[in-house]
Image (cartoon, helix red, strand yellow):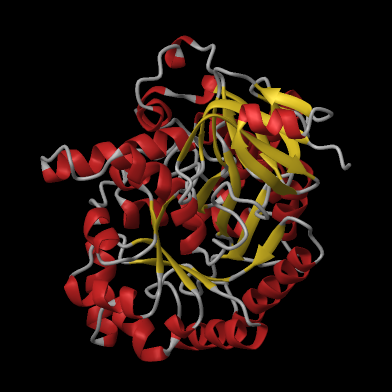
Length: 459
C-alpha cells in the first residue's frame, strides 16, 4: 500500500459540501488528496502513514490570493498620503522603467515568504513594469515562485500611456512571461490589462488578441476609483466594464480586481459573462478608494475572492488580515452584523477565489482528487485555546503566529511557521541593496529614507 501523510485536526474545514469534519484528517499521497474523514477511521485504515497536525489543530484549504503585485515587493511602507491616481503617478510610474529581472526575483521571494507564512498557497499576480531594455523582467517572478513552492497565476500589467513604453516591448514581455510559466510546474499565464484607462485602443486590442490566440484568461483592474470610471466614460462613452463587454474581452475567462465603483448594470454584466472579482479591502482603505459591494455581488452569484494587493498598496502581504478585514469592512459599511460572516469570508479566501480564477475543479477546497494545498493552524496557541466556532476562530482569532504548517501540491513548505524552501534571512539581505538602488534610480528621495542624500521622506 502506498504510504501517505495524515494531516489531523480538531476541525477540518473543507470549504466543500462536506463542511466541518470534527476530529478529522486529510490524507495526502503525492500531490493530491487521497482521502478525508474522521481521524479514527482514517488512522485505522492507514496505520503506516506519517501523521502531521494533532487533535487540537485547525485544518483548512490553502488560501487563494486573488490579486497582487510582486512588482511592488521592494516598496512596502511608502507614499501613504496619496489616493490611487496620485499614488500611481508619484510612485508606480517612476519605478516601472527601473525594475529588472533580479528585482522581480528577489521582490517575489520577499513577498512570497510573507504570503506562505499567512497560508497563501496560490497567488494571482499582476507585475506592473515598463519593459525598456532587451532583457525580460517578469520571468524572475516565475523563477522565485518555483523556488518558494508557491503556486502562481502570473501576468504582466501592461499599460502604454506612459512615455517610452512601446507596444512591441510589452507584447514581447507578455511572450517571455508566458514561456516561463509554460516551463513551470506551479505557475500558469494570463494576459494582464492594467486597466482600460491605462491602455491605448491598439494595446487593448492586441491584449485581447493574445488571450484568444493563446487560449488563456485575462487579469484586469476594473472600476477601482471614481476617477477611472469618469475618464473612461469621457473617452469611450461607457464604463470600463461596459467597454469590456462591447469589445468582447469578457469572452475570455476574466478576473477583475476591485470593482468598487460599479452600478447595477455593471454587476449584471459581470454575472452574464461569468467574471470573477478580487476584493482587496486593505488597499481599498489605504488608498481611500471606497468599498466593494461584496454582499451584492455574492448575492447575484458573482464569485468573489480575497486579495492582499501589492506590497506598496496594502502594505502587509498578510492573507489573514485581508480575510478579517473583508468581514469588518462590509459590516461597518452596511452597519449590519449579518452583512458578511466568518464562514462567507473563509469561502471567499478558498473555493470562491479558486472559482473566480476558473480553478475550482483543481483546488480551493479539501476534496478527494484535488490538489493537496492546505493550512494547519496550531491549536496549542493561546489565540486558539478554546474553539467555540472554528470559522470564527480562523477569521477573527488567528494570525500568522497560529499558522504551523502550509502544504502546496503535497509538499510541506511551511513548518513551525517558517518557510522551508528558501533562506529567509538571505532573501532579506539580498533585498536591501536592490530596494536602495530602485528608489534612487526612480528619484524617490522625497518619499523614501532609503534614498539617502536624494532627499528627505515625507513626514
